[in-house]
Image (cartoon, rainbow, N blue to C red):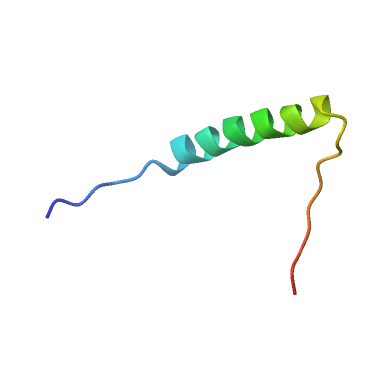
Length: 39
């Protein structure tokens, strides 16, 4: 088995791009994105 080194900054950037697209889609649909918690 070969170890794989992950690039944390690249992964972060990919997540940010995806999140920005999702937020833009929600905003365009007239919804306000927000955060929620489940206790």
